[in-house]
Image (cartoon, rainbow, N blue to C red):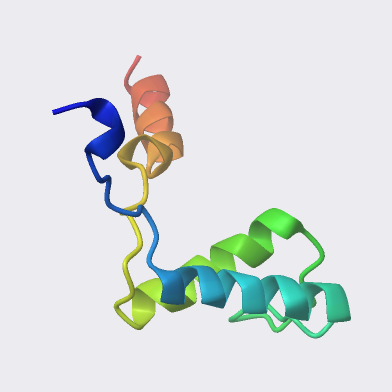
Length: 83
């Protein structure tokens, strides 16, 4: 089968992208707040992360977080204390 006819699944579901879009809109309005501290969010990356986190909580189609980004500080710290 030719490669052009093969359908690939979407990485992110449409509801997940709507959550990110909503978070970006709130960021630009200046009304987006972080969860625990309630401080105003000023970075795009943080707004995207908040949108994806909301989507994950509601069970939308969002890929898992990359394993290499989680826990790298603790792994490095453990190696440095052992040596």
